[in-house]
Length: 188
Length: 213
Image (cartoon, helix red, strand yellow):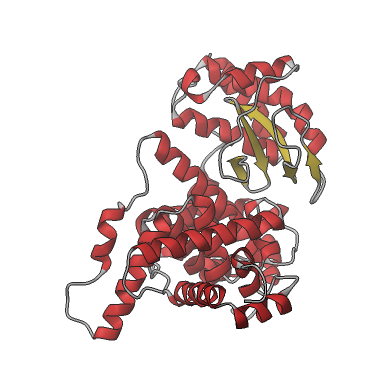
């Protein structure tokens, strides 16, 4: 079952096969949690929201019809829920769960090989720079660079035109580049 | 340097989405500024792709399945707090708007231009109903609810229009209505039901709300 196409699993899940649904969850849980963590800045919040993503997916199963990519469905739900969560946090005066100041502490104080240390430091800098981008820019960068989705799929998820994806992606990359350069060092 | 800089075109170029990749490639061979920017964007892209995703709790799938069980055991819809009149009115208005929304619903991949003043003419709603509340233009799409944003990411605020109902709803900014986020969540539940065209759920919610009020 683990080799089955996403839509075959959806079809089985629609027929009540919970093993097929569990297989979908297993297949997409890490990408969805990663996406939510990138958007929210907190792995705990990310897991909670990701859990809700799959519950919503199950609720909407009956309405699903095969599309080009199942990932546009699952990330479409994740997009809505993370934006709703961010909106609610802003209303309650709470920003991203992880303050930017704490991000450099992602670099472990335990001695580790220099190459690995460099990579971890780089990741921490990139995460910090990403956190400064707008939600839309973070989202478009993640969907393109991490999930490797094409412009059309991203446009479907973000409910905008392909041209908008193109321009947002260019602006997001440029802003991230400038932020990393302003942090100095040999980040790029 | 053979021509003007191509900084603005590098993003689509590295994604293989450029319509003029040969020209850009030629330019990169002769312009050191653009070549450097190109390399920086490629490195940035490689860094982002190489970053490891977070580990997921081993009990994640079990928690999802437990969440499904909990949902299926819940009987009907309930409100976490006592509704206020404004919510009931919003619900009623939303139900009226269902008539408007229904025009936009039902079709797969249907795209409908919006005809409201001050809303960009290129703004489109896809596959969903149009719901207006709290002065915001909202979309109840197939996957839930969200505030429709313009290209800059700013929420679109709906201006008053000639339609009396829309006027009423447009006047309700979130701050003026003093609606708590719980109540807002309930309204979103209503909109979700609208998106799902679940008339039974809407009827039940309407009765509950009006009884309370």
